[in-house]
Image (tube, rainbow, N blue to C red; front, side, top):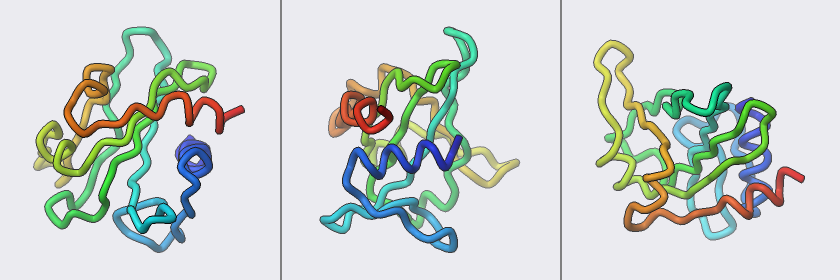
Length: 126
């Protein structure tokens, strides 16, 4: 699912996917903005919206987190660009994995600086 999410987000943002050896971000926009791309598939309507581990957040390895939540059939429910400062504020550090976790709930769409890209990602997925 990670490759699919990265592909449709890069297409939606007209960004270039980074090489597999690139650490910290998955794509770069035409303007040089670095995107970390994460997706979550909800298998039940009340499923967890926790995204996979975000590593080295203090090193500022990306500019925006592009997050997507899918339903059980991989239809895009909602998506957003989340600035790294918002990610740093909302994410929680987990010592046992030495990483941060973020729950991408719909309420995140209302945070200052967050851009709703749902329609762009839905169009790119078609």
